[in-house]
Image 1 (tube, one colour):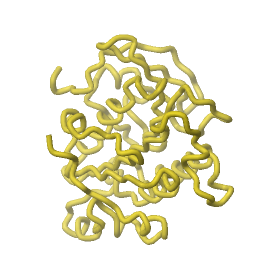
Image 2 (cartoon, rainbow, N blue to C red):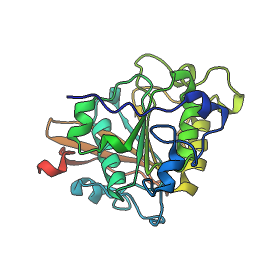
Image 3 (cartoon, rainbow, N blue to C red):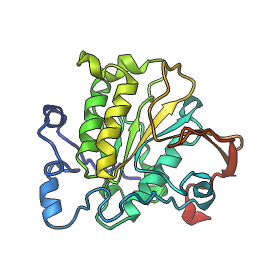
Image 4 (cartoon, rainbow, N blue to C red):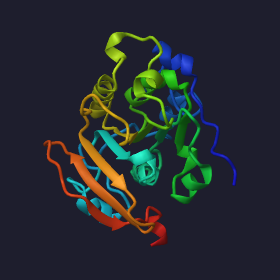
Length: 255
């Protein structure tokens, strides 16, 4: 199986603030794509319509029948509860909005598995994979989301076992950027006006000082190989739901 296409971004350009919706894509030249109508900006023509996944049983238990715009947390113990499969289904849904819709996956440790991406139905030619140093994850994530170039942005937040977010996300930056809660707030401010859905993949086994200000928190687990347990840990109205079991079949086209 061939590796994912080497779409990449000049990280120094992102951090310097020179990248925006006129300058960033998988090859560093979003302006040309946009001028040729090869790129659709996030939320274009969709308003606040939820992102509907090709996973009917899952959508039935989500508060709005799909994923909202803004920051959504997908959390599981040890990141082994189906978070990646869920996120790939969301990427597929984002790409399905239009032939010119792109997605992005911020993958500091390069853990994204190319065969799994393709098997999930993702078009790798329209998925930007960004692999920043872990210490620069916060600033890069904000820049990518603020570009408004992507329907869905996935951030692999807790992929390193045994390290804390504070030591991994920040490299001596401003105090206002030194907490995961502040990062989530900044991502939300960048995402909601642009109509982007941001998925944070987190490890529920890690201690946390405060509840993250996400629009939706979904707690996932795999009670059996064929099932996915989904519990709404927080929705837009602050409500908590009971865990519900759905068939684990993210490869919807396989039935």
